[in-house]
Image (cartoon, rainbow, N blue to C red; front, side):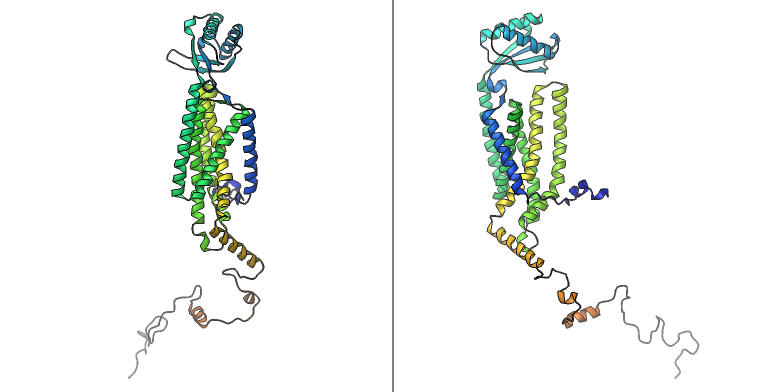
Length: 397
């Protein structure tokens, strides 16, 4: 019974999930999610980090207490100086001089930053020299964004060229559409939930593109294998062959995604949760979300979109019509399936028999029969005729 379970059928590619046949459902769900993401971009926007929005950061020694206590003292100093800013993010970082707390605030002038720094030192009972402050301009974040967009354009161009040479242009279009869907949905999650966007997030966005492309190529390679020479027979439509490829590669894609998500989840949990490393949190979070979305888009968007594009090919259209016409004829009994007895034979009626076929059938040995070899002249029972050593066996002259 266990061998017939879902996991076993998935592993053998026998689950029979109708993924391609329900492409209208997947496209509808994807369209709604994209619309929600675009509305979130327009209304909520993104929670930009200090590198993109600009601001100030203060680093205080971890020996002053807990991170929450340090955040409260910095907020008190900001309020005392009437800056109107507050602590946006607070994290624990390591350095040559020991651990410290990095607290990032909104944009402050040089005089306000010095005053806040002195107030923090007074409240915490430490020297002002033990507190380091930095001012970050939003121009740096703009440069990072421009370079990221340039890298994305180059990556997409190279991917298109590779997929066209490796497969065909329809597969390239479907794969790139899946990649864009992955980026939009991942960015939509960031916008809806309010995750902070940092340079590590941008790096993670570019990283998940490679994983998403790998997953799509694995599925498309199986699709190409199943559909090679498909027009030479009338057994399957292109969509059915593509759907079979999805089922056959589903378990492999699932295993790949799980194996990739486990270390990323460990990085997110240990690095951010236990060690308090903000950079690891930003990188691990976008990788975790992006890889999970990439698995879904490669299965539910890329292959159904490929089948839709291929159905516009005149050759595939003609092939699909032949397959459907043959099935209609079979269902009406107008065509006898290959290898099945004809209706006359099924009813026991006498039918003309080909003489050559009959001769061949008669010459064929029965199951379990001994080979019919030519016996020796006078041989009987495998012994020499005429008696041999038996008395009287010799022929009298």
